[in-house]
Length: 491
View (cartoon, one colour):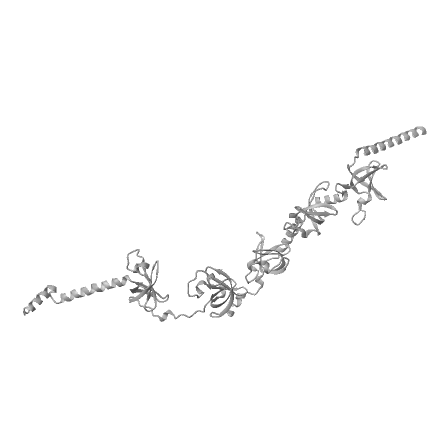
């Protein structure tokens, strides 16, 4: 080929290459519209601009400041792929921006997307409390955390979170970053479960644990053991009676308690503070003797008596029968009131049953009933009606012993109203049927007295008949004999 032909061919290729480049340049310019997004590779950094390749020989420029972090350092380099939006052509240069709607840079958006896809935590600053939750800033990006997701308790404490930084998990993330939903609770729950698994392997009944009071309720206090909550029931707060748990504990207070029960199936852990305190009942037998006199305070009234606190954790009972008022009372409130200081007498101590019996009056020793001799079976005695029960009549004998006449032994027609027929104080004669010396129970019979009297009358009659028969002629002979004697005749 001649030199002339070579020159013509080279010029032709040059023109063709220039035409292609021009066409590519024009096509890029034509297809980019303001706001249109492109992904491009950084090809260089010069001055205050970052240059990216837009295809072919076409380039675009982005302000370098958009790639600076909070410290001012440049966080982009040649070869990095960035996402940007076309803005316009100025002075022949295509200008783009990584700022997406709301001011989120493509770099930050990429970071958030990676965290969202990988389930990685991001750090956010709680800016303020808003309706339904909290506004959170993640490196200047506005996000929202619902109140239910700010902690494990549903954000009931509200404003205490404002101004604090926490790690969050991204629950929702829109393409343009307009809707970012966060959760701190998800991370806390994972942390709690991990700690629970560790704690469960070490906790056992009888072990002492230390934690902080998380919340106080009417029924007790919850203590945070670092991943597991334990409940101290109000009955386990102290040996002394506690009506309000917040009278002895405060939220945030650190306490040591003993584990008294564990139920992992129901996730329940019960603790006790009083288990670490001396048991007041351990020394009861030495400190409180029957017959002793002590002072106390009435702490509770019931239908059957009054409870008196003698010392912290130690209550005694005054039974309603031991008020010693000399008259029958229907309720202890007729004699004492809650909070009243009283002087009481000890009439019984049972440490095993944790029971102390008290009385408002000293117990006068009664003469033993054995001093009144028990009657013997078969004796006929006199007595007076003491009381009448549905099953019989109690009769107090002259000796002072009380016996029971069962209804069947009263000698009255069935259905007789004994309380009407035999008022208290009525005198009657009875026969002793049997005596239980061990139980000192005497069973009596009024009917047996009548039956015995009838038998005796019959015997007397029979004896008189026999005596007449022994004279030889009976009653007719006696009459004849009397007539003959009148006439002076002898048989």
